[in-house]
Image (cartoon, rainbow over the protein chains, first blue to last red):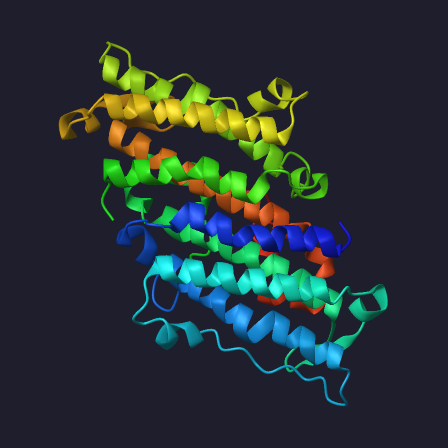
Length: 180
Length: 180
């Protein structure tokens, strides 16, 4: 499948409602469970997605579109949400994510990006040159990555409860060493 | 986390709306993409979840609760949905899944299961004796397994579009050999 801006925005627009359906009002045992030390709970994932709205995809798209002499991205902080959201509830984070995402997608659409603009490049400190098209595709994949993670982390809270079914439920043994 | 019937039903109740938010009206490129031969697309997953409602979890719970002399489960057919849903649309499958799930959860709640009933066992042809508690826990995990799968399969449709970001997005390289 080739990158398509409208089909990408369609997925990006769904993430807040998808996470809301899965997580709004969910019990703490589901919301705060993790896969082990230094891995994300569903609560952490929503905080990380908020960080993405505030510090990652749109800010980097702006750097690319500004066409300045040094289109280098700011590094992102995977743990920014930890201190930021200490006093927050999951439901308030879900609402904040929905608001930020809607506003970022409105901005993205207002740019009416051309194919030539999608080919413009920024500089990722570790990965080197990346195009705006690749950045926007990675935004979509990043949403789906973390939705898969939320489902996996929730599933693992019942790992000991399914008894002999573990080998039939590979999600329980995915990422035994953290990969994300 | 120990098995809890109410917390399990809470998750089981969310799956139709979660999948609806993620998939209702989505383009064919997202709905029908797979991870390779004999793997499920999002369309297939919703069909498989319908099969679960009709032939797996509640039918097996009934066998256990009947306390007959031979509480052996019928084997399930992972590909039942293939022919069943040939002429269907994804949106109609999402609606059917929501209806079947609501009705099955109403039935489950009407049983007012006791701890003693949750300890009752059936016989899985490959796995041996399994309790009703383990069956219901595996129903929850099965939902989350397939939600994670849908997100992963959709993400992989953009694998070639993210350019150098692949190593930062492990969902793109999870299950390179099919595990589910």
